[in-house]
Length: 196
Image 1: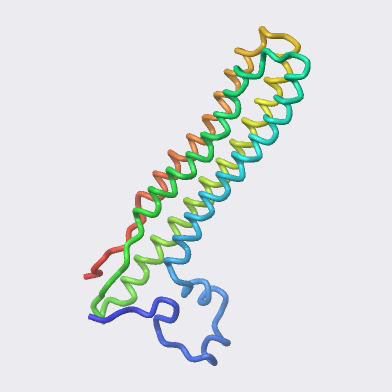
Image 2 (image 1 turned 180 degrees about the horizontal axis):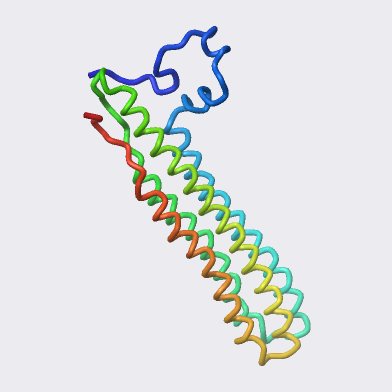
């Protein structure tokens, strides 16, 4: 049993690294880097989507309350839907970070198999972060634009509030679908503590 040098598992020299192909260079990027980068993508892009949605909704809501102050409180539901997008990202980051474990030891004759398993887990968490992050980014924008339209329409015609709110709920469901797909994607990711 020994500790693996993840960044350079075959102890290549500088000359060997210079002659390596792009595929080999990407293959030997630390699997933990891919994992944590996926977690960061899921969290960051979800928060960006939520903040973008809050920005778009908030501007229209504040502008519309000048004409119709009564819409101020009931249209805050749009801001809450946008904030839920950021919470989806936090939930997925917690689930993803729970999958990462430090591989403490491995048999010398199984180094390639252990590294491949870790690399699969790293790539799985990376692409989970990409898909969850993008779905939540788009969900935040969709909810923000719909919430903006809801505030403006409600200021003009109060009967349209509930109808547009239903559309906003369906827009918010996109982020939830992204979380469900992300849970399915990262279910196969595993880092074995002792790769035996």
